[in-house]
Length: 465
Image (cartoon, rainbow, N blue to C red; front, side, top):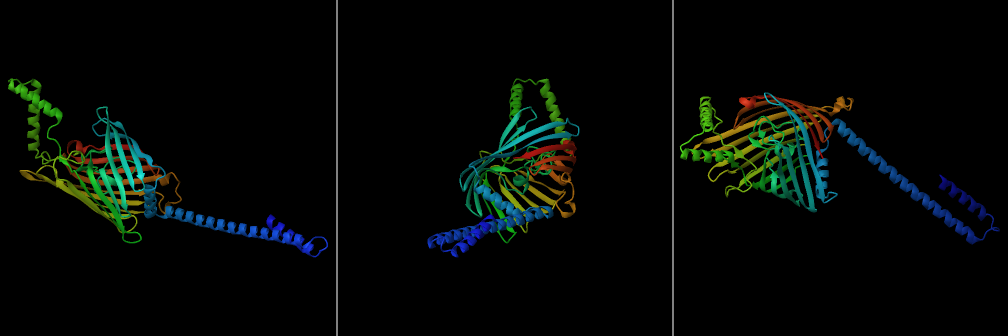
């Protein structure tokens, strides 16, 4: 307004001066005209800038309203999130990044002492240049013998060869089904334990599982192809060392055998050795009397074959189909030799669907193992899980903020393991302190022989960073 008043004043002044030629010369009048013109031009530029700023504010407001509306009514746009993540992966703000997650838990197992647990999984990431990244993760856990175990979860180099192709090499989380690669970290898993088909991992369960959370050493090619605005096919193919059969005798057992052989040569047997032999024979007779069909199963060790025990490599892959945002189905397979003569084949299927606060998912695993001179070995199992988060639809948008952080989870699963069959039902309640910090409570109902039938209460606080 001040500029307009000043311009008006100058215009009036010029008009008055033009009518009084006796006071000013023509040159002075022209100078005043130029000054008025500059003032008018400045006013127009400021008006244009204000108009552009107002338009940007309106656009920003519209975007915010759209984001708020989508958060209230449905799930976050996964395609947009994927684009942001991909952009960060390719152009992070720093060449070196530390991430990971940690957890603290409590387990009260039937007929056993309750105990507190803790673990740390630091992740180290380095970008050499735009298309070449190195990603790694360690797993640090507390052991039953009061020690601390440090394991290399994975370390791999990723090369972005094309928008639809990433080449990787190293020790990798194997893309078998969805849980191993995407869902097993404690801050992502909605329950404080693993499904019964998975075992041998931090925060595991009563069940030894059919397979562990899979990882292996080798090379991999993966990517995806868009089929439409919200549908696509993703793929992953890999060549890895593959599993090996669990050693028949541990180092302690071999030492004991050697010691026993020495005593036998001398014609002597200790009282403890005789008692141990009798106890072992009783166990064998009891297993035979019970018809224990699991006592003779071969247990494969996945991800432990760091120096391949044979020249054959395991081949595997996963094909996933996303028909629309919030749904995916996949098929996975891996096969090869676990020894010089014996083969294995592992296959599975996974599916998930998410709509607003409801999430349904399930997985199936089937393991076939050839055994030289004996009949084949077959194990399978599955789990299905349902979860519902409050406050994800309009009817619940008026709930207090504290209630909108609650999620109810139920999971049912069954598995045929080397220790016996187990059926498991788990009821859980998760309170999301933040989107990467769940506080979880669960109760497991286990049906199986011996320790496999122990029920458990679990609680866990996990934090992703």
